[in-house]
Image (cartoon, rainbow, N blue to C red; front, side):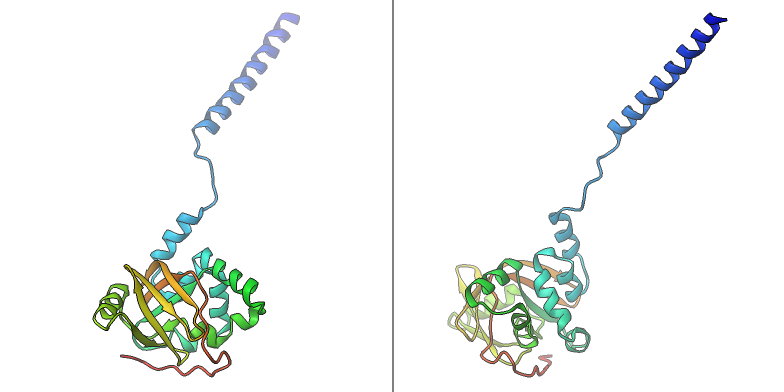
Length: 203
C-alpha cells in the first residue's frame, strides 16, 4: 500500500516537473513582446497618406501636432485645394524657444505661427533647391499665414529664414499623399503673430 502511494506521488511529481519544463521551453522559443520603438513609429509615419496624420504619428513632432489641432485644421488645411508643404519643427526646437524666448507654449502654438510653417504648393525639396540655384541663391515663398519665408542653400541643405531672422535647416522628410512634411530644427516666427490667417491656393 505504501509502495503504491509512493509510486503515485513520484508520478505526480514527474508530471508537474515535465509541465514546468514544457512551459520553460515554450517561453524560450517565444519572441519577446516589445513596445513599438521610435524607428518603427517614424517608418509608420512616413507611410501615412495624410499630412496631418503623418505629423501626428511622429512622436518627434508632437508639440507641432498640438498646435495643428489647436488651429482649425479641418477648415484650414484638409480642405485646401492642391498639395501642401509643411515645415514641422521638432519638440527640441520648441524647447529651445521656451528657454530663449520665455514665451508660454500657447503663444508659440498660435494659429499665425503654425500657419507660418505651411505652404500651399506642389513643389518638393529638390524643386526648391533647383529654383534657389537658378535664382541667385535665394527664393522667397509665401506661407499660409500670409508672410514670406526666405529659402537659401548651405551646400545641399535647405535653410529657411523667417521674418525675425531665425534660420532653420531641413533635417528629414515624410511623404504624404497630399503633400510633403519637412522636419526642421528651429521654430520660425512671422512679424505679426496675431495676424488673421488668409488661405490662398497657389494652384
